[in-house]
Length: 290
Length: 276
Image (cartoon, rainbow over all chains, first blue to last red; front, side, top):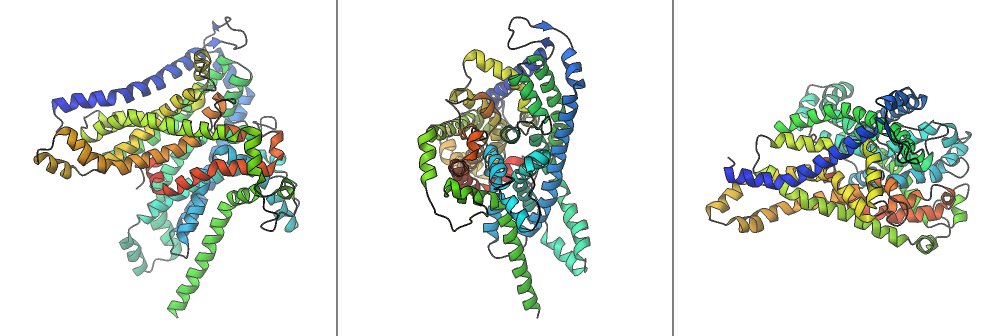
């Protein structure tokens, strides 16, 4: 179909994008790999020397790494569970006809457009403050003792904030998928007298399996890199309680000026993200063929 | 009988639906309300929901004390600048891949997408050092360049899917009529491509506006956009809840409206066509 001439033109048109993305991929990543083999302290310039894999052994055996890795997995896993389960329920709700549905839909997707620093600070101060926050007032009104969220349950606090931010994404995608569920299929199930629970499990959930996979993969990519929410609320603390991998590497680089160690950590983070990315790219690639 | 049952059903669903919407939206609603309170009312216990002395002084104070508009301008320049530059690079590429695909197009597209999956923290150190040496730390140009590269894969991908939908039949018909290549682009293709281009700009401006890894790490004051400015309320100033709320409300209001307008494109842009 494409002629010789149009192919040449096509190549010229695509070239700038490919070149830029290639540079953006290769140069910094190559530098990170190179730095990760050096002893390199930003405060002592000129003393860099090659130390092989020492940074990796140091980083990977550092208790802080183990802790931050488990924090990362806790954060990603919990947010995924909360957003997918709540997202399915909200999507089912919004798929029903009711008065003012389009307004409710706007209310539900709104958190996605709030910048991370704003949502984190609003939750931390206005809602979760142990004395003057709305949650404390609700707890007291119901006769409970208010929880000092960030002191007692720092990780859960971060999880709640991040879940609130990502709930609209899950809901919106699952809702879009639900709306493509064949009405014929629905009617056939109704005629067969399928009960609501079997209908939900065998027809709705089966139909949602693929979009749920997409939600999980895409969210995981972003959730592995949660940073701003931790930066403005806990600073990774108390202790290491809310330090995830991204935050640990940031601290190593820009607070402790350990370029070598931070680079080794960066490579570990890239490898982790790539494991997820492989599945996601495959899934998207399959869809591209259709 | 059946009719009455369905009315009751709709009433119940309406109630549950609005309740759920209210719960999810509450933090934003509460922030907007707090922005109109005095600092004293903002702290009051029990909280005052609507019966408080409404004031707009926080909005004035935020501007006076911190030159708020300078940060607004930084956000606008960085978000729109990065998206427009990446559009200039992406439109020809997406165009070529959609209209003259080769056997390598699929691989190229997927590879471009995979660059988006690299965690930014993996390249934080080299980018920081390069920017330090080039004097690009805390500059708008530096952030525009960086976010432009970050936007590029999504921009190309979205444009590609929109261009793909342009019916080739119309194109062929106009070619039969002997239309030249320039007029073909200007009069036939551009009008059909514009909605897709507009949606792509919209969604990516939203994403760039809220980007909070590079903006927090590479700016300190001069080029700090709203994400970084709001972060400065995290320490002692966080005690000023009404002012934090006013600054936050202004920071999210325009983008929330844009977001509501673009809710259909959101699914498309963020799932890369994997959900339809």
